[in-house]
Length: 278
Image (cartoon, rainbow, N blue to C red; front, side, top):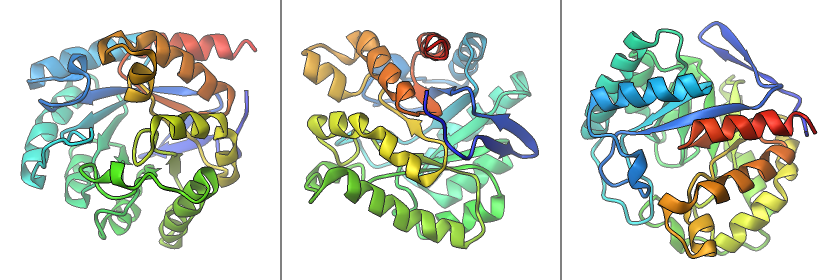
């Protein structure tokens, strides 16, 4: 398996070694996420799901209150915070050792979540939708997932035309990464943004050339779980896309992924364990 130069994350003073790839479990505090099985309608349900994921081997739990599927409804920052903060605090209380990540592109939500116990910020916009995000995460001094996105979650599928896909994505990520590192922020995870301003064919091309992202010398996060690239290609539903997810996660691991962001933790952990034998 491919390795990156930067193999550790500093999570509020606790060091996590990513020499062995880690699995991030998805906790959606939304009513309209594309995969119905991931939707959680209460804090109690979120705590229960968190326990199941941690027992299955999740290294992180990623809480989000804003659905980023194409065409999803807009949610105000206040409503987003109201969705995620009670669950984040309850999960932190129930599982004090859990590593909690906040899935948001808004600096204000990121700040509140870290104050409530989150140790990582996962920004699908890579700092492009909130001018305060980079300064905020630099001040908070927590690891930050820099994802590639063009447009907004509502408009991103209008921006799938690239001169040369992989070099263009690398260049656009590098621009944002340079801004972030200029602020002194070091713990950055890079996410190529599968499904965000990319067609299914482009997602396969991106995955095939994933090792190109090793140039950043940063951990790579890959989020392919149950996405339309899988179920549209196979002419199935998101509910039937677990097997396809495992196949593509395995490819990602073989090409250098350090973190798999998934709905189904046990299967991803098993993929990691098997790939480590190669």
